[in-house]
Length: 574
Image (cartoon, rainbow, N blue to C red; front, side, top):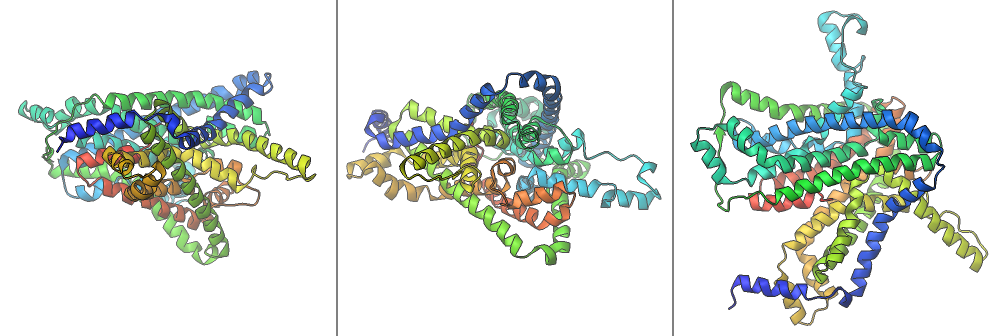
């Protein structure tokens, strides 16, 4: 019997010896998927360059300076606060022992279930002058009007930073906690022998080693911050994303919207560079191969109370308070809003999300299997290129999608006129197909990362065995790989489904006329200052968002070796 290392080496040499030209169909499929994913970005640049050059001075003089400054300040505030919340929570639940740690370990993930725009709507209702918080303050201190006291304004840049930070910090918590779980035992043992306690080991050892993970988590949080449109519009914060939306819908200037979107792309490219740099630096951090328990610093008295407070506050502000408001509002509106209209909204959202998840997972399987089958650097590059949509905000993606679909509609219409003498009109533009396309491109990175991580756990020896038994690559995929990939495929489909249910910017800009989803329904009522009427729909989105949170909470309880792969699969790599 050959040694395991020799067998793996033989399998690797056999895989690398395969030429991409031997599998033209799957390679062509990879090219097609990458082209469809990149087409909106290329179209966006073409629209921006083809627009009226006189628009640029107007944008530079009026819109871009204020919107860019506001966006930078928002991202700076969110980056700092998510870092503090995510790192502090990850360190305490990983390295310290205090009452309630096991429960807080998974509860810190709960804010991921609530979209930022839903949290913003809830906090405006909670903290408004007629809301429960200020009403309680007036009743306790005897104030008669809001002019008798000072209260922070939630509809402000500071309010947006507060809302987004307490929703997005779990991105940092996930990546940093995975790093803490896999850090070198030798280094921590040395720090303890030198008299360092929990605080000293944190600042001098753990935090410097976790910096790349912090960069990755913060970058993912900032990408979500840049994508948001519902929260910033409701809170009155004029970001670049909101400027793209207003320029397109209010002024009817598609070229101007594309030009502002190109500025956003520059910001996105910078974030992608930071994210890639953070992941690359993570590879050089040695982790101990010894599997043993991490140091467990016992906390008691005021220290335990402080740890409980630090870990509980993000959960209370990021999930419990908004969920409490939604539950109470939904209870009051249940008899009025829970009817045929609600089921129509739910069917629209579920149908779109299921279709998008099926398309995204199928594309991910093709890309991941083509990379494995061919061993080609070109195919691997195509897979990375096809995943770029996750880094592009929904508003930017919507602007870029409109032109390719309109061009295709015009081509089909021209062909139909030539052959049959009839006009087909707009078949794809302003249709649910456009939404599915946008969702699939936007979340392909999520499905691809999960499927690829699952496929990497399947030993290459299985491919060699299938080939020796006469199976074709398609047969091996159908009979061997697909059954083994069922957990990864199910996870990928679930993540894309929930992300599609929550997606608002692309849905608002590409949906057909008189077509509502749960997300747009909530947005419509919030824009009319009638948040309570959309509470049941918002609560449905939150309940759907709890599914991947439950999945991640299970992942966080498995051994450290499995956790690292799971986090790489569920946190997309751009």
